[in-house]
Length: 435
Picture (cartoon, rainbow, N blue to C red):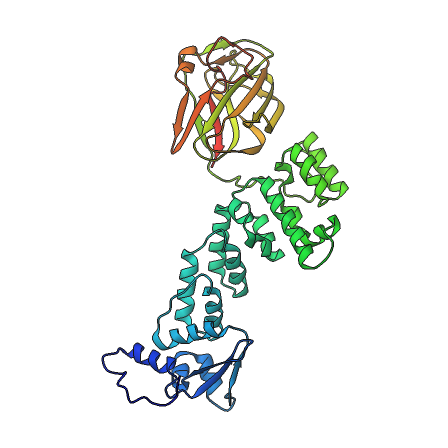
């Protein structure tokens, strides 16, 4: 390129922005020289254009404290700086995923508001599980609170994909804490623990220290306290959490005590399940008015089901006492996956008093994730005075049920021990779930 004026007529037929860009790219009449990046690459521009587009450049180039000689800009790559200058000269830029954060940095540094807005709009519409962690960190770095809020919304809605992405391992501890403590994070709690354990191991490797339980706990800090350990299955805690060494022995004992006595919460840990405020839905297998007598039997009733979408099962419904009086029942129940692994269970004594034709709700201590199009089973033992139950006509037509865009299929279960001559169970008329 040359700084000499060409005899060629490059001005005719061009718009203002086009002539500006031509002068920049061909270094025509440039009077400011920058040394950019670690390579000290020479980039030339026009004092007039820089002053007219940025108050920061105006301060740098005018007045008693004005820069003299070549100006060093070591904190960005030369190509990014040229892209930034292109916007100053033409008010146009093509933002790309691999350059947007660097361009936003320059827009912030030189107070170019229009360019900031373009970068933020691009980021707002281009979030993916693979880049969202970088966006979150950069939003915090530049104190972009609206962008930070939108990034957290995206992470909450795509929890599993984000926490499994490579980007999660590069988050700062502050950002990991923000993610893990969110009540709205849509993810199975087991995946939360696996993600933070892997993150801690990566931090040890970055610091070139041995991956020990003590080092991992030091790296995690308060992050550990926001894992909902009471929501994990006992099997997962025993086989995965305890061997990781992330928890101290007193903490492990506290969680064990909670499993034995659910009203005894482990000290210092968050016990509230995630997404507890999501709208609860009830899908009815049947709502019958022709109720039958359910005798006092000490045997299991069970129903298998699958849903077309991922849900979190909160509980189920049963029919009330045949007498209509206040009655006491011993109720135990378990939810099992396709491998008959117990996902959540309850064992309680409850008193029920209501009109004999009504149903009542039972909630598991912890909701459980039900995978889409996969058979799961609820098995219930309902011991106490006689209750009502559905009749065979209702059961015969209860193999399918819909609510909103959730579609359920019900099939008989081999775990049902009561009334085995029937096609489907006479109890468990409804399931309670959230998205």
